[in-house]
Image (cartoon, rainbow over all chains, first blue to last red):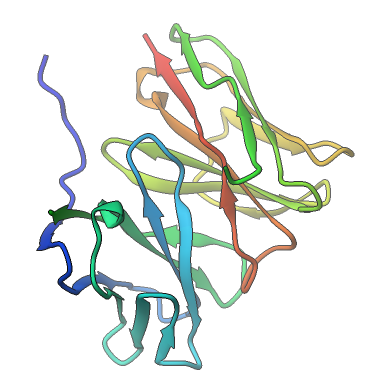
Length: 112
Length: 114
């Protein structure tokens, strides 16, 4: 039968290039944000987080940028590798600290 | 390997039935979260427990319930199952809860309701 699924935004990049994955959030009360990576058949894996009092945070090969004015979050992956192929989710935590909301995700494919 | 274990890995059952999913958090983690990931809705937060007590509730149906036991393992009970309950159910744990506490996800339980 016909399968119905979530139509994820997709991004294809050449190995070695930089990737930018974007996320828009809607709750202005959100003050903590996380990026997760989910490989096929596995659970989500924490990549990097950022608090609302920051606009940039860097990790190993990854950078998260937060623009609270337009409620936009981005994840930059430097020198993308085939192992980076996965679905990437952003998650936001409200300032009551009680609930995480996840974006629908972006599917990243790295072309060798 | 995140250190979070979930059983069973796969579960196939019929509509109207009841199932229990089990989660063991990482050693030392006090907080457990349950999530549902379906094809048409993405990842949805269901409920969080901290040291045995419910801390936060998300989009959890009344047919679903959860608890965290004194040994900190958690169970998610799904009853009167419907076809739409078919999904991946993830458990995650963190040392505490909320901001700044990285959540470690288990491998998930795939539930199929026929």
